[in-house]
Image (cartoon, rainbow, N blue to C red; front, top):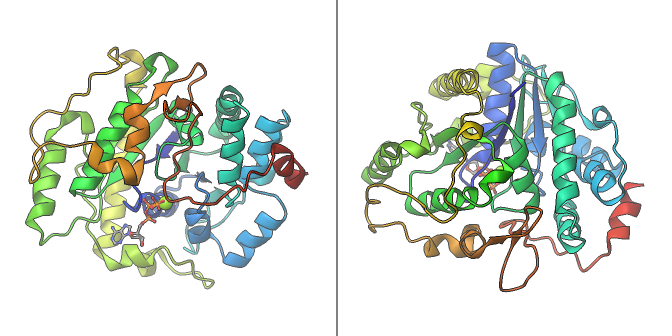
Length: 360
Ligand SMILES: Nc1ncnc2c1ncn2[C@@H]1O[C@H](COP(=O)(O)OP(=O)(O)OP(=O)(O)O)[C@@H](O)[C@H]1O
Ligand SMILES: [Mg+2]
């Protein structure tokens, strides 16, 4: 069963979490699909979009998040029954009853540091594979909300999920993010990678010639597999992020064009999932270094990957050499890197035992 989609872009703030939210609520309301949202971001953005702060806080306080599941599986070698962590019937849309959530917690960053510190990348990948194996038969669609950057955890999702979906803004720096991701993907092709479901242009400003130009440029590159539907910048989609304690109807949350666009996006996602029998497994990329971007980027001419480096982990991908078990190693430090741009929680050098104890 191929139904696990990692929603990712190395670039932050392109609308990944908002798109996961809209997809989940629309799949549930209009397609009658059961959907599991896995929040793999320490910021817990999509968790707080799908439930109240109080409910999320309670789950976090009781150790019922992805952090504890992964700490047990990876640092303590105990495989839990994943079902006890899945929260059914989240969302404030009254008809979106079939959305469930695997919530996140800020300590995910600390966990990732421990994985890198203890060189447990292989165990992490195995734990992610096992988790997906457990949940695939339970839901029609699984959406994984990844943080920006290319952390060891995100890499595991990208190698173990069936598909990846990439929202992007039609602008220069977001386009650089796609290029960084493409380079990363070409590392260790033999280790497998999710199939590219496509790039979704998000937050397009209808009145902006520059957005038009980048939109065209992104579409022309067939490797992007750009979706036909383009999601404009719209205030209902911005407001959708705020969870309301009183349930509301789908049209109240996604009025007018916002709802139409989300439904069109869902139709295209479902069509692509049905059409795609793991295309990239059948034809793995063979060249580790070649990056092919055809045509010229508008405005500032070619994509200079350097431009993206400070913000979205480009430096990591560009200088990266894969280590034996699939983590990405930065030559500068010699340590496996967790480039979770935007997630700046300092571990304070806490040992692995702190996390293990926290999970107990
Ligand atoms: N189509 C849209 N129109 C207007 N605002 C949007 C749209 N999509 C997302 N936003 C807004 O853009 C901001 C960033 O969105 P979001 O948090 O979903 O991005 P992200 O890629 O998940 O960010 P991060 O990389 O930090 O996880 C939020 O304020 C969100 O409400
Ligand atoms: Mg997000």
